[in-house]
Length: 203
Image (tube, rainbow, N blue to C red):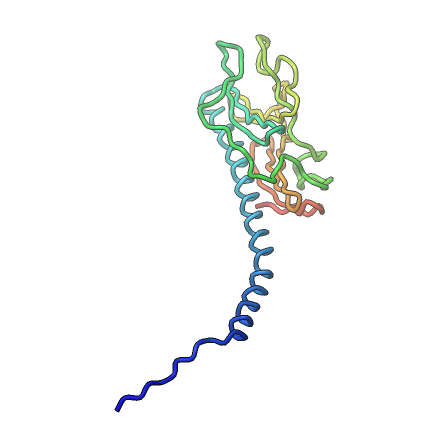
């Protein structure tokens, strides 16, 4: 003869206790997950800026003309431009404009010291110039911009065409800061530091 067994489920107290444990674990994990996602977004933006600088350098040497990474600090975007000698004007490359993630800006937070053996004073690259019939350095500065400029040999130069190792771009989310620096050689390097303290580490 078959006998039926009682199939008891979970009690209300057991369900409430389980949900409470899940809630505590979730509350502890969410801030950590959010910070990790923010770090990944910032690191991705830093790599994009680094790659943009390296690409502008390579194209300058390949096309034997001046190229620049044009940073628009008003909308936190950047793109590559080349100097058109025939038109005496800067022209956009075909690459799309790249925008930084939400909450990431071209800035260096509360930092006051540049990465070691790079700039003499911590600062974003100089503003881009309009360009004119006098050449790529002609015309006035464009407000709210920063430019990394390369000559036709892929060497970083200032707005007047003089070789420089003082150009850099910095981005931050308020917690961490990344910097892309150039030496006159030209060596493109990526750095990281907490936004609140000068502790640069090369990445």
